[in-house]
Image (cartoon, rainbow, N blue to C red; front, top):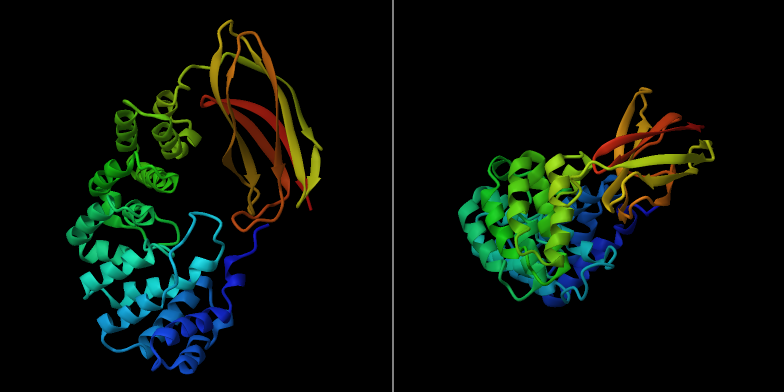
Amino acid sequence: MAEPLINNYGPEIPRQIADQIKAVDASFQDQAFIKTALIGYEKLSLMERGQQIAKSLETYLPADYEEAIGILVASMGPRLERDMGNGMAPFIYLPHSFYIANYGLNHFEASMQAIYQLTKRFTGEFCIRPFLEQHTQATLERLHLWAEDECHYVRRLASEGPRPRLPWASHLPAFKKDPSPVLALLEKLKDDPELYVRRSVANNLNDIGKDHPKLLLATTKSWLKGADKNRLWLIRHALRSLVKQSHPKALEQLGYGQTPQVEITQVSFTPKTIKLGEAVELSFELHSKSKQAQKLLIDFCVYFVKANATSSGKVFKLKTLTLPGNSAEILKKKISFAKINTRKHYPGEHLVELLINGKSHPLGSFLVHI
């Protein structure tokens, strides 16, 4: 199980920030800042820690915001060298993001310049959202400029910042109601050369589809025209939530609209009974009942038992394949009941079904006990 992020966000964080600021502003009261930032620190959540450090920055940086943000930007280290695999290192700038969001709304240009620099080192997606709400048109105009920036971290912000349902952030009600301003940005970014940017575009579209599935499908349908392999990947990723819901038009767009002609045999759960924390292996044979090759998208749904003894289904990807006519393939998948942060497991009978091109095929069940 992955270690909680907060475990790597201890008292050393405000101390590191203090050292960075002291290096560019000798008058900064670093010890007083650290002492204030660490009041009750151990009891706070990750985001609460970031907010408390930001409040302490406001106390000990100059009262003039534009002077203060200049010092804060000057104190930041070099830009990121890679998109992924940076661990918790960029999170040292989480308080900087909160500082801009909390205290910079009346200083638009200075804040935009700070966000521009911040997103090259961490992300500006959290702090730009209050500007989208209070300075909507001006911020959208800036994002259109950034969508053409030479730095792909800046271009990514043009997509990630206005996501209607951004994780870890408050939703943007105006864009949930009318996502057309967001789609105008995504049009500029759909063929970005960087996967990091295209992934954000896909995630943004997936957000939009949760409120406007017809609009998402209309967008992806238009984007399919002349699509290369990179845009096809983006479209598949954008449609993932609708695919999990077995939405027929989403499956059709991806080439999985045909009704599968298959038979499922030799279904097994090994072992049939497991304890919480263990895993069960699902295995079955998929037989083609057609003389023609079939393009199949295969997911499976586990109906997890909840605390009140009812069950709730969760869909997982299994495989996409082209099954030759009159052929068979053995498929296997492990279903883990290890402890995770996002779901609590409970004992009981767990039903499983396959979803092949959106069509349900019950497989049976296995037992989980304490």
